[in-house]
Image (cartoon, rainbow, N blue to C red):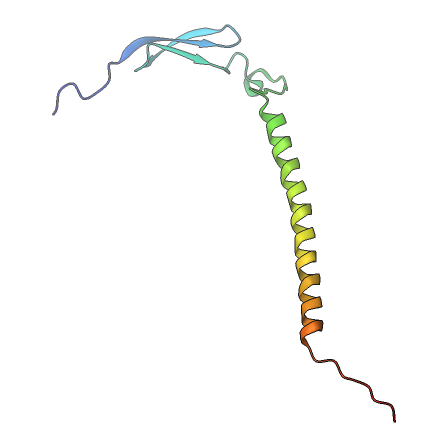
Length: 101
């Protein structure tokens, strides 16, 4: 086996949560910062709260709104192109001239 190809293992890596809870685990990184842990996660605590990191929900809603606006514009373009195609078809088709009898 090759020597020194694996990263150094830290048996007492310190994990720090945003809520202030700390615990130790084994890891290749000596210090780990996390946003959620078993002490503050809604699934484990039974408390329902919205965890919004960096406005992810707001960003998602803005993205959805932008897509719906773009969809409205696309529908307008399709309708416009179909109307232009109909006009072009009318102009290119020979019109029957009516003669008086």
